[in-house]
Structures are given as C-alpha cells and as structure tokens.
Amino acid sequence: MYTQALDIPDPGREASLKAVPPPTDATQVAHQARFDARIDADGKIEPQDWMPEAYRKTLVRQISQHAHSEIIGMQPEGNWISRAPSLKRKAILLAKVQDEGGHGLYLYSAGETLGTSRDQMLDALHTGKAKYSSIFNYPTLTWADVGVIGWLVDGAAIMNQVPICRCSYGPYARAMIRICKEESFHQRQGFESLMAQMTGTPAQRAMVQDAVNRWWWPVLAMFGPPDADSPNSAQGMRWGIKRISNDDLRQKFVDATVPQARILGVTLPDPDLHWNEARQQHDYGAIDWDEFWATVNGNGPCNSERLATRVKAHNDGQWVRDAALAHARKQKQRTLKEAA
Ligand code: FAQ
Image (cartoon, rainbow, N blue to C red; front, side):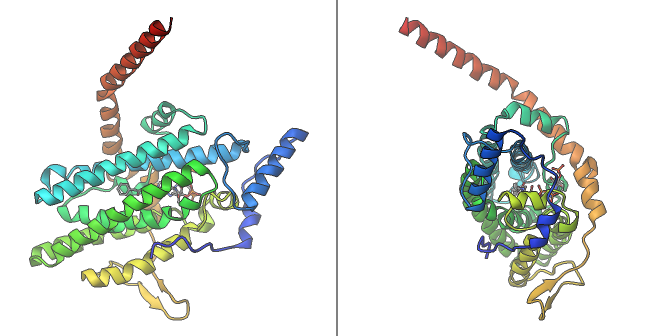
C-alpha cells in the first residue's frame, strides 16, 4: 500500500529547474559530468564524492528539516505518556516517542556527513531559522489524537518517506530504510488503538471522530504545497532526492486512507471526497493553504510552545553534554599518558 514502486515522470518539470550556476573550470566540469552521469544511472552519491554545492545545500536543508520534525514531533504525543489509559498503551507510546528521537539522531548524523555540525543544525532550529513539519504545531486534545497521529500522521510520513529510501544520497537513503520500518509499526499501532476505541462507548467513538475531523486537513497539507507552488520540487526530482511529487503523494495517501476510514467506521470531514471512476482516484476538496503557510511561518496553534519546549530541553541538557565532553577529554588524556 505504502509503495515506492511509483515514479511519476513529468517532462514538463525539467523546464522549471531552479537556476544552479554551471561549473566554470575544466576540473569542475569533469566532476559535474561524473556526478550527472551517476545521477542519470540512478547511482548513489556518497559523502566523499564531489557534489555540486547546491545539491549539498538542498540535502542539508531537507535532512535537517526532517530531523527537526522528528524531534519536535515527539512533543504532541509525549504529552500523553503520563496519561495513557493502560500500562500496555503507555509502553507502546513510550517506545514510539523514543523511536522518533532515534530517527532524529540518524538524520542529524546523515546531515553531518555533508559537513554541517549537529550544533549548527540545532542552532538553526532554536533560532527559528530552520523549518520543521507544519503538522507538529497542532495540539493533542484527547487520547484519540494519539491514535490519529499514528494512523494519519505516520501514515502520511511513510507515504512520503518510502520513496526517500531510494534517494540519490547514500546516507539519507540508508537512514530511511530503518525509519520506514519503524514508522510502519507506528501507523499500525495507531490504527489498532483507534479500532479499540471505535468498539467502545458512543462517547469514545465521538472522541475518535472529533480527532479525525481536526487532523485530516493538516495531514493533507503536510505533503507540502501544490506542485505548481513548490519551488524545490523540480530540482529535487532532477537530483533524485525527491522521487514522487507533493500532489502525487497526497493523492496516493487519500486513495490508501479512504478504505481504512471505512473499516474504522469514521467519516473523513470532506463533502467533496468521492471516487472518480474516470481517473480511478478520489477527488477531494480544497486545502486551506493560507492556514498551512501561517503555520509554516510560525503562526500555527502551537508553534511558540513547541519551540520554547525544545529550547528549554536543550538548555536543561547542557550539563549532560558538558559532562560527556569532560569525560571524553579525560579519557583522551589518559590514553596519551599511557602511550607516552
Ligand atoms: N511543513 O518546494 P517544497 C514525521 C516548506 S516526519 C513545513 O515542496 P521540498 C515522522 C519547504 O521546506 C515529517 N514546511 O519543498 C513523525 C519549503 O521551504 P524552504 C517531516 C514545509 O523540500 C510522525 C517550502 O515549504 N517529513 O512525520 C512543509 O521539495 C509522527 C516549499 O516546499 C520530512 O521532512 C511542511 N509540511 O518538499 C514524527 C520528509 N511542506 O525549505 C513524530 C522529508 C513544505 O525552501 C510523530 N522532506 N514545506 O524554505 C520532504 O520530503 C520534503 O522536504 C517536503 C517538502 C515534501 C516536506
């Protein structure tokens, strides 16, 4: 269902590639030719390989935004760890939130292979210069929100991330393989939790429906702006970083989710959502892009709370980093002394 077997070619996209300055001297031209040939042959670029500066910059942007999304994404569900309704649900939720922290670590490590330090990436997050996914600026009001995040947010994340397992940059592609396996468990546990709630009382069913109503549209927006308004897509696809466009992934997600909603017994809050026999896909209603951009630009329901929590956690953890560095220094000195 969350397949990567879909590259949707669009020759028109070549025309809108971002202006990337061509190399000038002969060595650079040869490097560029080798790089282009490897991309055209669907090969991998590794950290030690020559790469255009714009490719490196794009990867640092996307990988660090992705890492930031994973660690900020721990907060909405983390809020519910102390209030999970049973020991079993608490253990599952703890494991899931820890997984998201782990995804952040793999991704910051992948970002570091491009020559940018974790401190630099975190500084960009903490000073509000770097983006993270819009979806994590929405509140988790009830326990049902935790299930809906697993079902819909992780479902959307897998749809977007499975194709990145085939990204042209080796360390990012390899990190995504494990991340996608874990996201798959996250999606299933969310669906299973909602299934349990939907077989409960009318109040529990109403709580699930209310959560679905609040999350559906922000989840659709999570795939990014429409292709026509996506400045990075054409170049990202030319470089094999992005394999499937924002709109095509969004469509695949809607088509995969409608039957799941039917099994759960919830209604997706879109009167325009229906099967289009001619297209063999679902039509769906208009996304509120003003709300999306307001959230991306810092004015969503929880942006300031999320960032403040993150900065506080970082500052509170300073003593741990200091202690680890002091210990490493001592160990190094001891090794040098022994060798002398
Ligand atoms: N939120 O030209 P495009 C998860 C920005 S992880 C905020 O289309 P691109 C796991 C975009 O950065 C979720 N900003 O850009 C989890 C760009 O701005 P810039 C994160 C957004 O890069 C689950 C501008 O709009 N996943 O959920 C968003 O080609 C549960 C124009 O956009 C990833 O990061 C947005 N939703 O495509 C954790 C996956 N969409 O940078 C906890 C990797 C767009 O030029 C609990 N990333 N923007 O200033 C990608 O696939 C891509 O970067 C896209 C955006 C598809 C997000």
